[in-house]
Structure formats: C-alpha cells, structure tokens
Amino acid sequence: MVCSIPQQGQPSKMRAVLDDFMRGTSGKGKPSPELSSIKGFGYAQWPESLRVALRLVRNLPTRAALFAGPDLLVFCNQPLSSEIGSAAPRILGRGIDELANPKGPRGWRSLAPVLHTCLASGDSARVKDLDFGPVKLSADVSVVTDEQGRSEGVLCLFTLQPVLVRSPRRKT
Image (cartoon, rainbow, N blue to C red; front, side, top):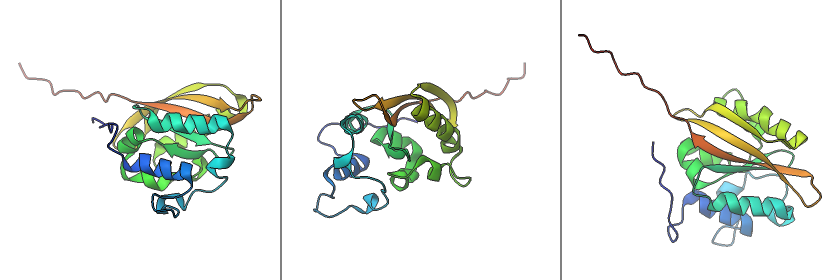
C-alpha cells in the first residue's frame, strides 16, 4: 500500500483538523465536529514541548502520532491517518485506553501498555507487529518532556511492516 503525502498547497483533512485544534476553531470560527470529542486541556495550555511535538507530527512526511498528557490523547498525522483508514477522524483526541478496547484494532491494545510504561519511566521503546486491520505497523516510541524533564507525552514514528507472501510452488 502506498501512502500519498500531500504537498504544500494541498491541505489534507487530518492536517486541517490539526490546524483547527491548534487555533481552537474550525476555519469558519466555530469548533470543528472532529474536535468535539477532544477532552482534557486546550492546546493553548499545553507545555511548549507538546506544542512543538504536535507541530512536528503535523508536518512530518512519515507516519507519526503524538500521545499527549496523562490520558495519552491521540493526535495522528495524514500519512498515519491514510494507513489506518476511516477510523482516523474518530480516534483524534481520544485517550489510548479508550482505543485499546476489545472491539478496536489489536494494534492499539498492543501499543497502550508500552506508551504507559514509557510515559512513566521516561524510556524509549520499539514495538513490532501492531495489527491495524489492513496493515501491520512497527512503532519507535520516545517520551516528550517539558523544560523541567517531566514526561508530558509520547511521540511515535510508525513504519509499515512488509507482509511476506509465499508464492505457490511450481510442480516440476
């Protein structure tokens, strides 16, 4: 599966939603429907380290997500959104524990304990075989700290795992 990355001047849906979140409104001056589910604190009250991390995630051409605050609220970028499909707008701003329920993709259930451990310990990690339905991803996980060194969130960079397909043996 190839993920198309929007070029400058071609705004994507997820990028526009992240822009709205950072402004606190939709382009029309009122809260966007995609943002209505975001709980917790507003972007303006975030520590500078989290705001920088979200801007980084928003602009990266590779699959990435920021899990912010103690509830690890999910903010993914367009390349990751394209990979995980239609679920992306529904996950924006939701806590990882809410996504890691038995009805959701196994990838969230596998990733949640790693994110919590990294947030608590300040350590980084690598996770493989995250099953998001049509794709399997690996994640490199790193803690985002504030100016005093407190863990404020977790940054994840995702890579697509190749799926090995065995070709049928030819009869000789």
